[in-house]
Image (cartoon, rainbow over all chains, first blue to last red; front, side, top):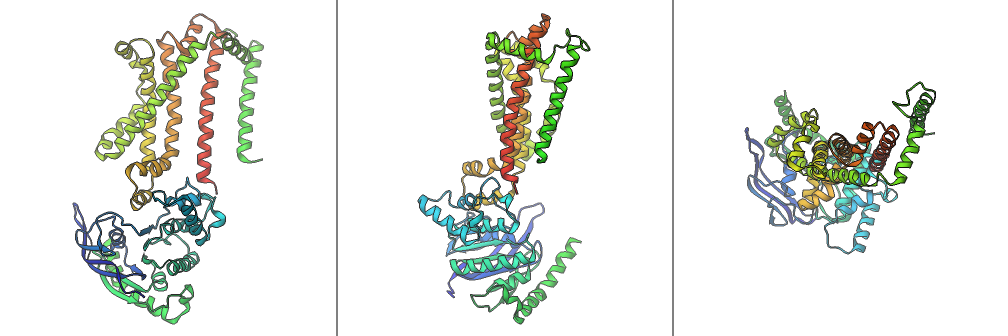
Length: 263
Length: 253
């Protein structure tokens, strides 16, 4: 694996102006390697999504430095970054093909190139026979695949996934995990996955960062050691249980803190 | 037979039955023909009046006024709704006023409008706009509220300019609710203009109905009323079908 730094956060802190002022995140130091599959788990409200917003440039750090490919992030999504959200972000008035092509509406590519990329992304995500369907005709998992395909046509070098399978059932999540791994292998992109599912993080990732309760900081960093050609069958590997158990051990105290605060 | 088809058939049957009942009541003297003429006579009167060309000027006047009021209400209502939506404070101030606006009988302003704008099209257009704009404002607010935040985030991720975000995401997303406002605006503009003509104007279909009423010309009155009714139903029907097509695309599954 190329060890070159792709995303680098240094002493990053994010506060939200009040009243009351909310210290959401940090200080955080993080380096995500180029081509790495990196996941973040943490208790609810720990600032996982804030961290993703920082990495994709939607939010500026209050202090510290956030860089993508060596360039400072300035509150704007840089070229080469694709984001898939937790919520269904397919557009109900567009067909699957039009939804996927939406990612390229502002591009200067020739029509033929756009068509080829859209066709490829639609096929890659297994949506070819539904290309002319509308989102309302698809299942939740298929709609999320449409959103991933829309990101894929941009050929991003960094794919950010904010709990993309949060609304799906367990079987679909496992299968979507396989799709995601295939996508990651074939595109060579770096992936940052935010998830609350420890098994998902343990199965998919090269490395998992465990965050504390708010303000979110990394309290553990777990290398999974899986090979690049892994798939959902790793859940049967005894090491999977060990990894999940370690993640939960790190996370339990923090989750209890969050619950205590909620109470 | 589908449920929609069955509902349509029942609707037609109820309507046809009511018309037939009215026809029988009028023909057999149960209803005084000086009060209501039989529906078949309303139809022949409408055809006669339209054929004679005597209503042409009124038709042009009334529908051009309604169209103008409708378009202005959409433009003003959409812009005002978007402006109110953009400012929380403004919304807090305007929301209760909008809710109570419907209880204001806008026709009471007609003498004032005539004094300010004179007789003619202008006060009728203003009356139509005053009647129709709140519906568009409320539907615009509701439509903009209905745009999912995740799509606004998507617009930022896709680095869309505000104009592109508006055209590609906000408008299509808000369209179903905007459409409801447009449908209401058409009805309110029609009511405002025809009622305005009825009360004080010297021209238009409202005036023609009022004139026939005052001249005890029941045949002309009911013929013109039927024409207005058919045009209003047809226009609303077109919008209804259009809206249905949009909704079906979004909801089919």
